[in-house]
Image (cartoon, rainbow, N blue to C red; front, side, top):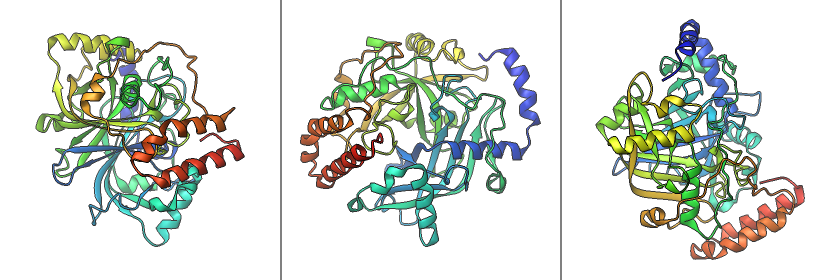
Length: 431
């Protein structure tokens, strides 16, 4: 339960903020973050589908409030009128020292809903300028993949950045606002004092790598089918815990407060997706996440049905939360004062991407059978950075996964690896 003193100080402040100040903080979050989680509904089954995408609303200090993406040309091909979706951002994605847990209301979380459409006319150049300014690697992505500028055309902006619950922000007020951090909480937030304590498993061990990512992730985007917005997906940030050390199961547990929009969604339809990225790990990534949308920055989606924990599982969940989320003690003591439920996922499908050539052929059975990752609290984890010896690192990476690329007959991917090697080695810049 949140400290009474903290609540007593925060609630008057929440009431005193104007809609303009709330919108300013939303614009600040949108401009500071560079990636988030996209949630859609499958066109046929209406099952929530998750993805990790980079975005930009403009070059630094030139915020537009518009969400531009650079995705393959066929990304929205199945939806000629545009892809209905929700795009979820978290202040936890900013790489700073730990001050707040992702589930703490003061760690800002924003979900922008609308239609993702391929840009046309002058918006194509505007989008490229915004994207390339924040994601310079995109300039070198292969033309054979037909990357194109897309924009999320907004219909709703929802945010929670303080005690008292989330709220919608008027789009007119949102667009009129200038980015400004308007809460008294520190602008930096990372989720936990824990740092990954071991290297990722070798690239050839797909199931082990997937389990490593889930075990070390402490927050995810929970994607559901929205009750408030029928026919639309919804995404929200939740703190997760996949066991401690060898007790890792690969099936994260999470807490959903009753007032959260996700709670009503799950009561109506338990089908959900949990999306996690290596870019969101408590440490500043493994060295592979210079660009979040780059395939070597691992990402995973776990799809299935969320199930309420029984009494025995609840004790396990609270123990997991105690270790994984020391900055959110209420998660280990029955949850928030608003009430809520603890869940786990009954896994039905998994999508894991950690290298060029498309998602891995990883089954649920293989994933669950993998060994539990080792985990420590060490802050001195060796990084897979492409700095000193980066040429050797990339060549070794290519060699380890060349058979994987060949199986997928991804010749452009091989060319991309070589191009990135040349660019990185010559410029001495990390990927």
